[in-house]
Structures are given as C-alpha cells and as structure tokens.
Image 1 (tube, helix red, strand yellow):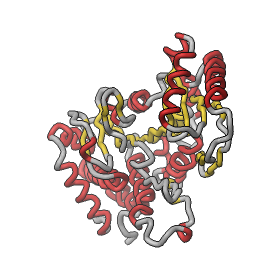
Image 2 (cartoon, one colour):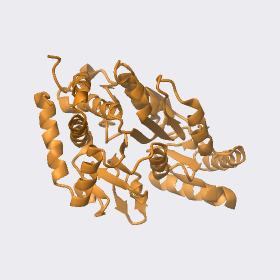
Image 3 (cartoon, one colour):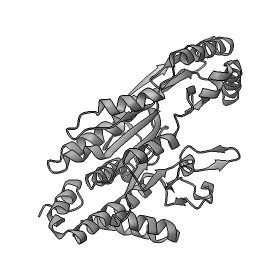
Length: 380
C-alpha cells in the first residue's frame, strides 16, 4: 500500500522497534496484526499519547493544543511536540476503525479525559462516513472520577453499560460521609489558613486558582485539595488512614493524587482493574498497554507498571529514562514519550491493514480510503 514519506518513515521506525523486542513479545505482536489472536491496545494519556509541558502551562488535546503559541518564548516548543497529539489521535482512531479495541486509561478526572481525549476521538471517528459505526471499539477510563465512557454504533454514550460499571466504582454514601468528616477534621487541624501561595488546578479545558484548601466529592474519588509540602501531606495521609474505621480502611485507598491533593477512592479503582475490565469487555486474548510511568522503587511502583499484574498483558514503556524501566518479561521499553507511541501504533496499524488485504483483496479499496482519511496517503 502506497503511503506518504513521513508515514513510511514512521512505519519503518516502528518496524525497527518491534524487531528489537524479545522474541516472545515480537511473536505476540505478529499474531495480533495477523488476527490469529484478538488483541486490544490501551494507553495512558499524559506523557504517552500527548506531551506534557507544565512549565509553559501548555495542555494538549488529542488533535490540538490548548495555548496561544504566540505568547510563548520563541523555539520553546518544538514542531514535533505540537504534532504528536494529532498523529496519535489518528493512529488510535485508525485502530478502532480496523476493529482493534482501543482504550485510554487515565488517572485524570472525568472532565479532563472527556474534553481532551474522549470527545476528540469520538468526533474524529464519527466524521468518517465509512467507519463511523466503529466508534463502539474504543473506551476511556477516568480513574479520578471512576467513569467509563463507551459508545453505541450511533455515537451516543452507551448509558446502560456505563451505569453498571460506574455504579460499582462510587464510594457508598456511608463511607463517603465518614471519609469526608475525617478529611475535614485533618484539614482544619493541619491547614486552617489560606494557602501561602495560590495553586492552579485543571479540569476539562479550564484552569482554576485555589486559595483555600477544601474537600471535594466527585463521582468515584473524594479529594482533599491542599497546598503543602510533600512531608506534610504524607503525615496527613497517615493521620487520615488511622482515623478511619477498620471497615473504611479496608475498602478505601488513601493516597497522594497529583501534586496538590490527597485522594480517597475504592480500592478497586486502579489501572489494573480498568485494564481487566477493558480486556473482558472486548473479549481480548491479549492487551498491549502503553505508559510512561513504568518503574518500581521498593514497595512502590508506577501505575503503568502495575498493569503487568494482569494476565495476558504486555506493557510497552515510553518513559523518558530507559534505565528506570524494570527488567520484567512482560515489559519492554520502546522509546521516549508520545513520539515512540506513534511509531509503534503506526507499525501496528499498517501491518494490520496489510494483513486484512492479504486475507481479503476485495477490502483493498476500503483500506485505501481509511489511509486517505487518516492522512497517510494522497487522494489520487
């Protein structure tokens, strides 16, 4: 299949990545693109599918960026950094269009995931006349909120299925009341004055400036927004855990969340649980998961590395530092960040399309139309 020069270069870069992987990992991928096993692909969001630039407060959506670049210092943002959200949106959408279940499993809020990931992916697939019904092939999970979003063939949210999943992730009212009381008491005891420096938080496409600490109950997570040192936050977490009843302590997971919060959620609200739900929901034989927080330090591990605890799962690390990626038979480092993700996703997508054509030559025109839509080749 004739593809344009940049896509061809990306495909060959992806092929080199695959060729460098352990034999058993490479064979899994070849079986997946050939259709011999039913495989799905899921990924983290920030740092994996889109860049992060907290210093310049440049927030990305799959398909665009959310900042007026004219206000930034010249050359502070590379063209490739700006391009990768669009490239990865197209690659992830293309996989869903080829009946490869595609998921995003993010630790962000439901508002953030919807605005920056779910909606752009859904809209891009729905804009295709030929492939729009394939919108059923992708799901997004927002762990800071406990929300799954999936669609029916019309592009509408599949509310019955979503409600079944989301109901199991909510904190029961009695536990929520207990946790709220404990968090409020600890907050008053420790941080009873305005924040020394206001902090910025983001939700969806907006930012807010917080000047007072407070407790907020969301769909699946109760968060205590603070602005204190890491040591103070650790002490507050210990105090909250100790103040909870034994039942609440067994059911709830109290942990740091991001840079400024303490999060309380049901213990089942973790990336591996979302990954298992995704695999079961789509009947997968194997899941390939991309993430940039693949590390293990003592008894602490990155939430992307935790996916290796699921059966039939291969973790593809895109950490900036290869040396921090654990030596594990189900983990492979494939390069740095969203660009590495795009190389591997492009390889998978093109190999899958070529296999489809090989098995059924009548679908060549269909594959050609898909690649035109994704911008992989010209219209002539």
